[in-house]
Image (cartoon, rainbow, N blue to C red; front, side):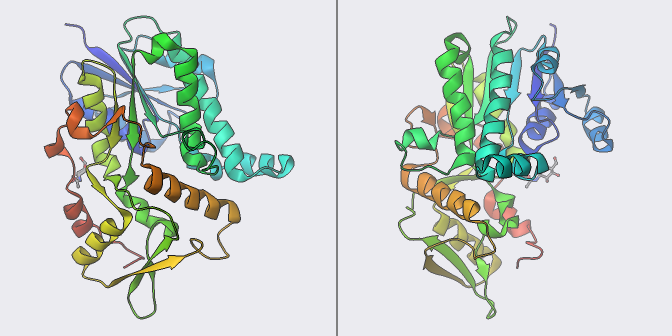
Length: 330
Ligand SMILES: *[C@@H]1O[C@H](CO)[C@@H](O)[C@H](O)[C@H]1NC(C)=O
């Protein structure tokens, strides 16, 4: 039987890399990874696994047409935070007097639409499109949450797909990826270490306390995607190996690391060194995920065990925390 082809957007990134590495070992599959720069030395490890690398740029639909040709499966993800670090985004924000996250969101939506437009034109053998997404929180909350833009860009192009291409929507599955365990590296995503050695977990007034999904995305994204691909009907899943409230997560962490955690209710996250737009982005993200739910309470978004994710293959987060050195933090 001829091998099936999975084309992976973002093959050098966390989610795409996980999917490509798993499918490179699956019998009966070929993997094509698309990347902007095929000549990077770090690509050698992917090539050694037999992954074909094709140059394409998410801002250039013609390059995507070539890259997606012949795919049975396309897995796609876009990266909001890469735009925040892009000097041209800063320039555009200054010129237009918009916030940095607004321009980043606009750029991300455009890339998502480019991918969707090209995938919508693929004829068989395309069996399924798997899209890493998050909610459009502004729509879900009728405008009450306005600045959760690192979710909303993905949500907006997902809404565009459903409204514009019903035939493609009938073949599309969604991964609502959870919190990466390594986000502790971002000082805004962890407790504050005090001089006396205790750790203060800052909680916003009224931020909510619903459980959210946590995962080792580098290793485990692929297991969620595999379940979405094997599922007989297209579906949607929360990408988490454990579901915990933020307080439960950090209490567990403090117990494993044998440190003292105190909870502190604050009016804003971080201090005056954090730009206002970023404080508002973080605050709205907490409000959305912890008051409305990671996927805004959408009943079509399933728990992993409901769609056949191989739960035993997912990283045990307690072991992950034990083994992580938390260098520069602990
Ligand atoms: C993640 O995957 C890497 C590479 O396959 C492996 O070396 C590592 O042990 C895995 N980590 C966990 C926590 O499973």
